[in-house]
Every structure is written in C-alpha cells, then in structure tokens.
Length: 118
Ligand SMILES: [Fe+2]
Image 1 (cartoon, rainbow, N blue to C red):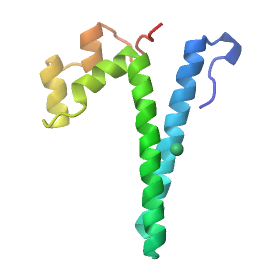
Image 2 (cartoon, rainbow, N blue to C red):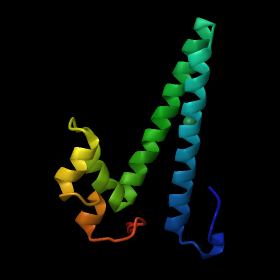
Image 3 (cartoon, protein in one colour):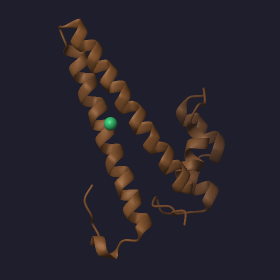
C-alpha cells in the first residue's frame, strides 16, 4: 500500500499487517474488475470464466480477512458483532453498543487504529 513511516522503523507486525491489507486491496480490486468484465461479456463462455476468476479472488480476499481477524483484535471483535447476522446492519451496532462504535465500546479505545496482537 505504501509506507507512510519508513520501512526500517516498522515492526515485523506492522510490516505483516501492511502486506495483508495491501494484498486484500488488490484482491478486492480484482474482484471488481472481473465482476465488471463478466457483467458486459457478450460471449457466455468468457463470462463463465470471468465469473469463475472473480470467485477465486473472493476466496483470496476472505482468506486475508481471516488473517486480519486472527491478528488484529478489533477485526475479531467487529466481525463477531456484524458478520452472519440477519438484523439490519445499523441496528446491530445500536444493539451491541447502545449507539456507539462497536469496537470502541468493547475495548474502550477512542482511536480507530486499535491495538495489534503481539
Ligand atoms: Fe487473487
């Protein structure tokens, strides 16, 4: 994604997080590209290949989300709050926090950065 802080100053953990997030962005970009190309593909066989490829990229993206969940506590907390629920998304937050940020309410954090697992 690019380093805002000189690479040499970053911890191994921060380097790993950057690698995961950059890779996730690339996978999601690929999902978007394949999805758009499949949407306009006139050839049905090509459309099927593009959809197959899009779905492979979704798998890659989800694997990276799982790595982030396992390595950044706030991802785990927020995924636990929001994912696989049937209620309207904004109502999930209100129910979990009484109106505040889900991760902030649970961890007491006031910044969006959150803590990284050691
Ligand atoms: Fe991929």
